[in-house]
Image (cartoon, rainbow, N blue to C red):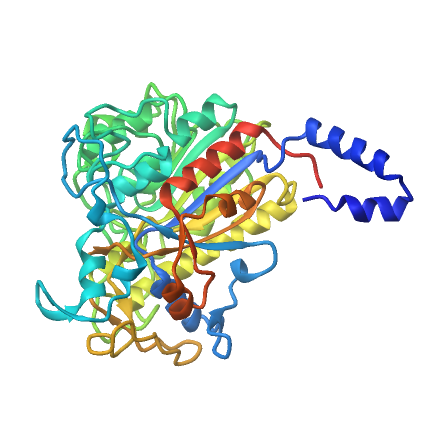
Length: 490
């Protein structure tokens, strides 16, 4: 907030004059408003993934037990975030009451007592965290609408109704912003679909979801994989076209005849050109890199002995940072600002298959995208104009230290820059663990108003502030920032 006492001292103003000036300023510019809102999701990436990657990158202060990433610097606010769904049932039941057994409770999450799990003896905390997890669809719905729902729902309520007009994508467009959603996985998958404003009773209805996104009047940029003409190595192949709306829709897009008016780009060179500068006619851009499942994670044949980047990367696809720059160049042509969701989607894919090397690769890609966003913000109006939120939709893998199967919540051990830390996966599934949330810019202060509780054990184990918010609060903060309108420079 503006330091009015300093202004008074500097200019020799009387208290009444300063109060009048402050009232005029507050009336003229709503506090914490944002011209642009950028939400960044590292799918399936909990505190373990964020910390292990920082250790590998050499961005870890062992004495303080904390990372030294960009988002650890001045101006960034930090919290943890809960992710639990309304219910674990995978269909709309009509029952709107929250399942109380899923609600995150620190006393249950950190219980070190022995317990009988699905695969034998475990710890009670592990059992609790692995028993009540959201999927990406319900999490995306909570982030996009502020509404808890059932697993599998894409902006669809438990009362079997689409949440039409209630997604952050639709709201942003109604308030004059350009809107985009980009990802490192297929763009009709749960997170880009949900945060791109789609509505569907079932997340796996990829073709229906893709068609809705392409027909949506509120989407201006879509980027993600699922190209049906290439395999996971970026080699020509014939694959299912359901991720891109089906074979007929794909043909329309390639021929430039889709009724949505989309401009299709596919080659790495096209993405790089758009990342350098957006031409005047770049208004509705669909970017589908020449690869099928993921940009990088699904390439080659993964081996347990792999280290990050030990297998050559796919050379024919852009990075998430390049896609980020390209998307922002298109969206920022709208003078009223934009909303953009950026997903590092394949962190989740790596954690599901317990691939630490691939997880680190994907998280590094996400970190580089954060840097690209911050660089753009600082050269285009500054942090008073843009709100950036970085978080995860849920944790995957129950990632802890090397001895965590016998030592509850054993810490991940740093082995130095360029070396995979000593770590261990305790699951191949999602968990109900807290996930990181960092934010900076116009409106980030609102998270302090929305704290749901404190977790002393989380503060101790991860060396973080113990306060946590809920994923529905992310929607509330974004919605409020877009409601108020942009601030003048402060």
